[in-house]
Length: 462
Ligand SMILES: [Ca+2]
Ligand SMILES: [Ca+2]
Ligand SMILES: [Ca+2]
Ligand SMILES: [Ca+2]
Image (cartoon, rainbow, N blue to C red; front, top):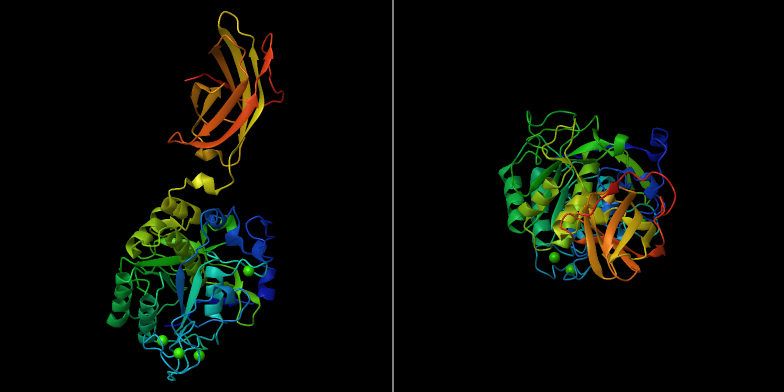
């Protein structure tokens, strides 16, 4: 087992980055603008999911090289074992580990040292991507309110053993982790490791594994643990920033049978073991994006089984073209929307309906002619039609979503109409947004009620 990460020093890599667009609305932390995967325009749609949850109440175990526990972006979200009294050299909670307050350290033979300090930097970076705090400093993680349990299985050279990894998985699952991030790969499987992952399944724990960094098809030559066919395991390939994260990173392993999902993994900015921040590239960096989204989904559905949590992530992946993975690109907003029953459009920019004008003629023979013009901006994909209510009576239901649009109606009324409400509806005819308008009364209808151009076509009531 060894870490598959490729490290790029921040200063050296900065020149390679395209000018990052500004998207400060997603997070106010100062380095968010350099976290390309967090742009609302990136395919992972992470900020959209935050409208529902930031991962509250979920513990993610990072089985890795430990972490810089006092890093300003990690400390607020470090898991604490409250049943363990720190530093008294007693296993107070009887779980087999002495003073395991923030996780364990399986890289040394001293049972009294369970402090998962990071000599390598890999685990610190992974943890920052999962749950970097929204604290006005540095970066932000995918699930910035989740807690991270640090399970140290890799030493200062990024090396560990399959038995150590297996023990780390058992510890994480037994001590409350809902999700385990394993950004590590090795050429051989052991029954011990496979049984540990099966134990995690029985505890309701989903395991997210890196596909590895050899740029090869692992359907042909397996890599472990990612190639294990367990129902609570997801393999992750890495994508590059171009096009919002749609192209496979050159180093990434892949395989339609073995690797279901692709997530941002190239030039990922996160926490470093020095207490600062650094860019790293690898499937190790893609895996924690998926683990973070798994935490978001689990926060919405805390009792969900690991196979069901896996299904939500994979069924809501965006179909990938040109990337050889089984399901597609990680999509946080779609997965969280599916878990919460919230329509996905509600998590993007909210649709806004505006009136450009509404005019009716005085009733003649019990009929008033009405004409209104309206515009819809924002996430219009979720709008399937409109209901028009005049003086509290529904007068028309329209299907379609064109914007701007004109409505012409013959209203049967003896009194001049006064108040109009236009309600945008989704496919289930549930209200998405609405606008209230005062109707002007005129002798005849003007050609253009509100002026302007670009009225596409008139709809008829239906
Ligand atoms: Ca203990
Ligand atoms: Ca203790
Ligand atoms: Ca230690
Ligand atoms: Ca932060």
